[in-house]
Amino acid sequence: MTPLDRATDTYLRHVAVERGLSQHTVAAYRRDLAVFAEWLAAAPTVVSDGADRAGGAAAVEDVARLARADVAGFVTHLTTRSEGPLAPRSVARMLSSVRSFTAFAAAEGWLPLDPGTAVRPPKAPSRLPKAISVHDMERLLGAAGTADDDPVQLRDRALLELLYATGARISEAVGLSVDDVTTLSDPDDEGADGDGLAVVKVTGKGNKQRIVPLGSFARAAVDAYLVRARPVFAARGASTPALFLGARGARLSRQSAWLVIQAAAERAGLAAHVSPHTFRHSFATHLLEGGADVRVVQELLGHASVATTQIYTLVTADMLRDVYQTAHPRARR
Image 1 (cartoon, rainbow, N blue to C red):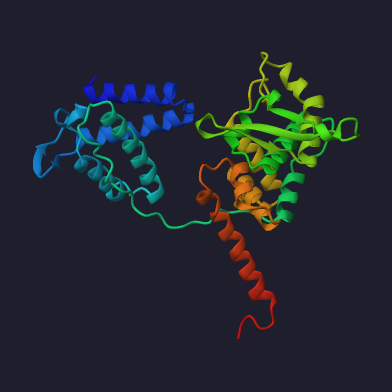
Image 2: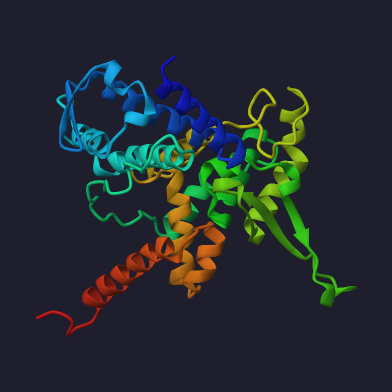
């Protein structure tokens, strides 16, 4: 194992243990840094600080020898490689992994300066999130099935209703435990007939938790699943606190949840337009169309910055423009 490999392993332990990043994020960092190390070992010549340096593994086996030219050259390689250039967003993700590693190396004193600081990713084209209409979402939810005696249909309907009701990422939804679904009682309603506010405690990126209300349709679907379907799945496997269970009684995987979405989308005739993130995009877009404040939507989605959420305001603005130009008799010449 080279010093660079040992430094990479130390960094990955740091982000997993001290920063508490999810195993999926750590695995992504590991893959990206492996590609970076492979390219460093294969690069024929690297120009660093104005001097030529021989390529090959010997030239890059020590993290202390990393320079800005190495990071910049890696970005150039990803955008011009012979087997096909990566999309700007993919390049940006891989550069982010490398820059996080070099920043850690500099903080640990392995490097005098962070060589990744001044390297910028290629600019990605602006893409608006894809949402479907409220009507299409109702078709999609209905396509999950409504049979009260079918455990699979009860689970699938509960999963899809929860995704749309909360805007949770697919990984967040399958990561829920039964105890994450609860009811908040209103102290002012003591003695009243109200059942309180059903909420879901969602654990997002960086293990940050947020509380998201669960609408009446989703609450009814989840309650029906918990009473009539989950016990059937739970009896097939070892005890687990997971909310959504698969056929063998274990926690439902992201891949299985994705197949649930695709199957419902195909039955609803929407397969070409639906991905797991469609629910999240539709949740945000429909809330803003209904008059919700963008900062409230930010909190519900778990975005660290309101700037990330504001892209959805572009969607609703575009929709208003299209409707106006289509409907108003003097909007066009």
